[in-house]
Length: 334
Image 1: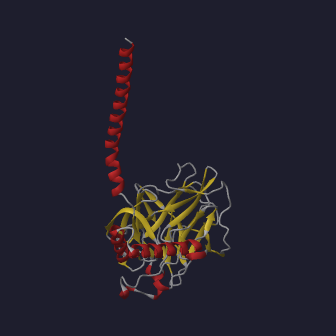
Image 2: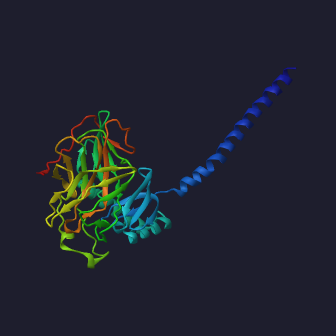
Image 3: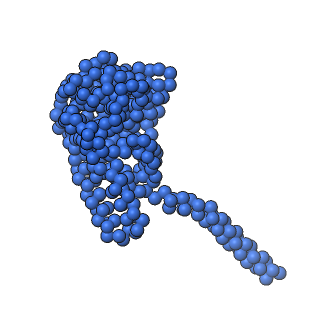
């Protein structure tokens, strides 16, 4: 009888082991597609002509824009096609697929990392732990629930019904006076404070290789303080960037509301734009004046709304309520 009880215990033990093995086998079977999917989503590099790159799992060309899925921020973003170094991008991808031990891939990777380190050394720090690293992006310094946050602005492509001409700068240009239409009733980025600081890199220069016949002196000698904050007119399901006239020296003659700002020239080609007085709740855009060419149709739109939810993918400062930039800027009022 004792032997019978012992045998029953042994059988029960083996049954438990068998159940555990079957459960583990089933778990591995379920995880295999995920592992395969992860392998397919290995980040590639979309290399830009300034030497920087965007880590992306995939991209597609849509007209004069390249739409890519950011591996760092886990979302779709865009960059002008004219800024992408397709030759370097294709070369890096071929070397990557050839294997990590490829001498060419190792050399190219070291070169890209050196370029990125050099840019980061000149990248202004706008708050503790927050730097302006992507020279092709615009940023907004916000404060949400007492915590300073750096939010990347989306450069929204507007539309216009007349007076459009292709240029070699960032894309299409609207010859003023013209109204630019932005789809959607509200901007995706919502600032929670009435005095946000905006950052954009003014160091970009026209790409003569794209269309040398279109180059003009006004494009090459654009002033660093060529950016303006404007209040948008609201329509059902759309926002309108007001008409702005720009003289040949880049000074704006406002036809509608242009926000008075102070501009600070930071290191690495960066410009900080801050409203002089608090902005009221509403929709705004940062626009780029291109001298006699008019204004850039791609604008950085944002809204002022203290009750808005948190912005997605916002980077937080290392200390709450810490003071903004420690840079010693050149200040110019307007």
